[in-house]
Image 1 (cartoon, chains in turn red, cyan):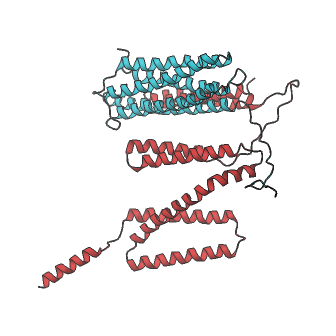
Image 2 (tube, chains in turn red, yellow):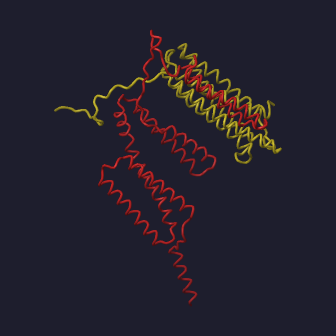
Image 3 (tube, one colour):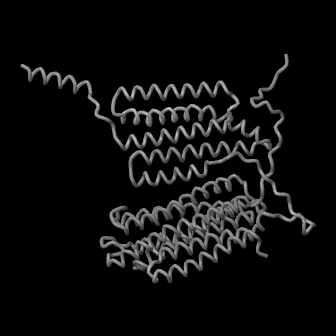
Length: 248
Length: 207
């Protein structure tokens, strides 16, 4: 008997195969690529359908009782973005390998971090049946590494983006005023958060996320706009010397 | 003087771990295989589309300066096909509880995988194409390097399996990780044969 999961995947298979035929005919039998891609999607979903049928959608009958099912064991797992991060790192590495430059090393670093985090978390969440205990185990090992590294990255991000904004402003005095204004706003908000501890962590997260996106956007726009004309001390002295020579 | 144990978490004693679900590795391997199938299909579709466009414009495909090393390619891919039998042999040996055969089969599987990578490296060198220099070179490398990475991942999995076989961790009743590795290996072989047909046999034929 075909299970529910199997029916879903086999339906996708049938849809992909029919779509491949329709695509091939509709493009005047000129584009093999699209049809082949759809056929491979069909093959992948057929494989998943077969897996669903073979494993009976993960259900296991208890011995001696036809109707009874083994209770599904749900493991309390911590949030795990590491596979996605590792895939991102692999993509960045491949692009960096083709394009050259720092992207390649950045990609390798992302892959390394993802695997290290993944291994520690995988170990921690299998340690006991208590998720809070597992989380504490994981945090005890990783926080001493994560907090300083993330702090450094955060400071670097702020320096890089905000410096682009200050350098793009039309005048040095305006840059100074903006720097003081932003620092004052940050201090005031920090005071507010400290003074009102009832502010929830989600509200705080939203606030920080919005600020980070705004900073990133301003940094990108300013970076594209370019820096204002800045006179270097050497240039000023050179200009003074030239003026004196001209006066003589 | 009493001795107190150091308890950094403050929960004592810790509850026992929850037993895992069955067939997790096998289902994971099948999901990875399905994802890999779509990946190979996507890069192969890109290659075929680029070929169709080039042929519609009467441009050469493969590039004029590309001379396919058909014999080397055939030997390389037939070696990969042969490795599928060794992978299956490893599983059969585990099911028979024959450790010596399992050692040989896992080792030969890994060695044949490495020989495939060596063969591909030679073929790329013989082709003399540079990625980005022509649509043919770019798409050819996109397909073959993607497949080579799949083989590298399969080899890494088999190295882990081989170490566990040497450690005596598998038995006829506990062979699921070996089955999962066999599934991944068969996928790497099958996708390699499809690529050999689409990229090399159709373009140049055995010569």
